[in-house]
Image 1: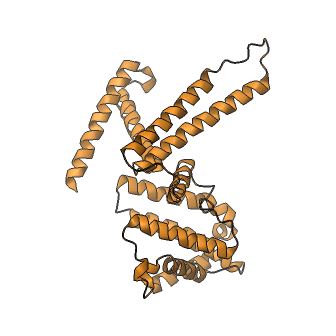
Image 2 (image 1 turned 60 degrees about the vertical axis):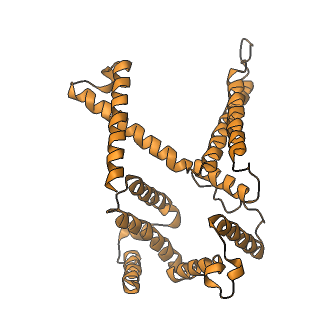
Image 3 (image 1 turned 30 degrees about the horizontal axis):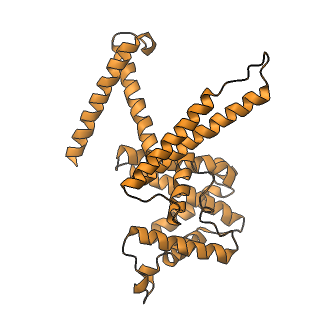
Length: 292
């Protein structure tokens, strides 16, 4: 393992060398950002498709990005891949005292929730030691996809006790909050526009901003429901989008068999084919479940 890893590090250095690859040599931390994001989402797609045969390849592509950024930093004298590995190992040990510290049996968590609580305590200590603001929310990157960021913010607030009780009463309160936010969105949409002959552009902009804010609150409350029922909203929405693509492409394929474009179909025909696609999808899912 160590020899192969060092071979990869050497290959990356060779690609960045003066006589290496022109494309690799001109890359920067900034220029590589979209590739890191793309490779990460390709791993997620493989996981969604449950294509385990391609998973090693896609994980390798993510690792390549780590090596790439580390090599760029090493050339600038900032840090090396060894520093990355050392800091990661130190962090894993520091945040798992119940596993790695002798005589820490009193810290041993009894369940996953206690592990998370202990993890947050350690991170808070780290923030204080580094002089960073002591907020549980500071570690949630602003660049996360919005659904995932909302989920993580709510999860962290929950660990501080800012949450409904996780029982039937709490579930009803979560649903009630969604209904409340939908009512506020409905009111914002139905609010009368200016009755002036020439509507005030500023008023129209403010009205639209209010609608946007209320819509955001609806989505945020739905994310909270997802967290409450232990569903990752990013995964759930991505899977729904994938199903939509699969079913719509089925409609397109069925239209093509009769020499028509999907736009030539009536809405009734589209609805019928949509239901057929749903039935086919359910059958395939059931077959896969029995294969496991």
